[in-house]
Length: 261
Image (cartoon, rainbow, N blue to C red):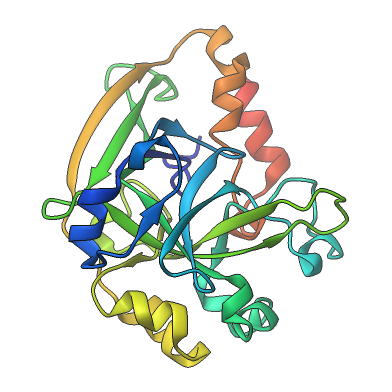
């Protein structure tokens, strides 16, 4: 069984516009409606999250998480699932057309924390296949909000004029490899302006060199061991992720391991 999921699948948003203005040093930032407050305790694929677009730097907009860009829909990798994450290393290849139009496609995604899951085996289990999923929450010790690099656009082959976004990911730093294979690209300070207005090479530099902050990590355990757990719909959702992240996996083998107990 896989011991961790490739990328975080859930985010927490508790947005207060006044606190965000202070953190970003951006007093002109505005959030329409809701009295400047937006809350989403557990945001997942398809949920609307707050973002700041390059074309409207003073306004917080809301978009659905999960994007289907045209090149992806027309590729052999397309499996009807939207891209939750896009690999930062591919910004100058697959995503180059979108990076060259920052006014229409670059954005910053806002959240307070994100979650990653790790499978912990029971030490006394003879087959070492029973155990528990441990949910770890990651927060910044010095900032209320985490700001992530993102790309957005319209879904290909859809008539609805609704914007969707994907979060840019990078290889997890060594201290986080125990929890995840890849992590979101976190922006701080001058990184924000570089992502929104910089060249593709500048943005690739962020993917390669930006070190994320130290995290406050808390966890919650979910016991496993009965057949019914592997059939739960919520457990299936943990495996919805960027298709590119799964290229090195045998998907049929993964499905067998999920349901064989």
